[in-house]
Length: 327
Image 1 (tube, one colour):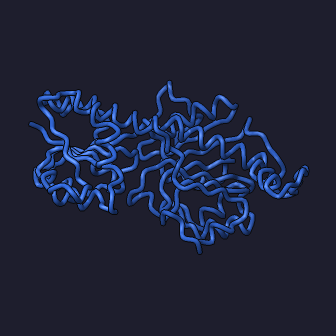
Image 2: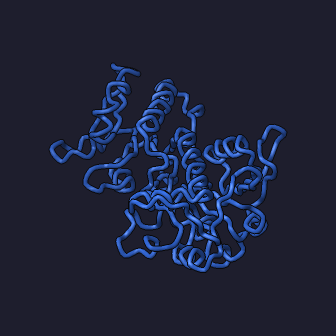
Image 3: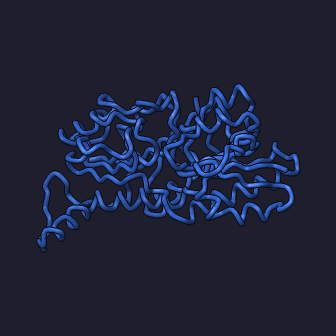
């Protein structure tokens, strides 16, 4: 009997679907209900999500001595305790790709808002002003013909590339291994040491990379000064990839046109953060991939992998992570 530890919320929402995979071979164990015993600690499978009471994935993994497979319902994996996972040879899979369509739509939506000043019109509506907004330093512009630079060419970056191309944009992309084949929809694939060129030449910088030692603090004051004047920055990855104080300065000094941040270094964003008052910035609370269909797709992926796991076909698990890529 394979025991699967998961949150109370996920048991309520998806328990029946998971149990139906193999009713006689699996047992679902709630791990974040104080009223229940700690029997979940003997489980061999963990579905990592938000846990009640502020419990972290690292704390859960430390208490699961028999854990063999961890599946996170998130695309990002900076919450995974990689040292412990690697030392114990625990299989890790994530949900990369399932949120890509909605996150690509978020990026495009924010670009339209910032380049057409639609957020300023909404603010005028709230103040009951029916004005044509004219900001000389922020003239309205179309996306057609602009060049987008994507930092992190994974599932989100690929989906975003197709969306940008459909609008007549050209795309440069950057990833650790800048391999491009004839079917890639990008105009150019860059290596990580070509970041400066991307910043100088692109009208849009979209961050969709995972947070690791090579991306933490990737964009600071030096990089923002190198960005093309009038460019827009969108971050749907992790807040720690950029220096927020430097970004505020870049916005105040007019080094860039504007920014949309779905993620920040500290979440929720503290009330005294200077980002709240930075000019021409749109802030959202990590919701670019927050839709019920996204969580459903993550569980669908888990269930597909669960069938393989129960049949001793772990080498075929989808979205299997390579620890070295996340440290």
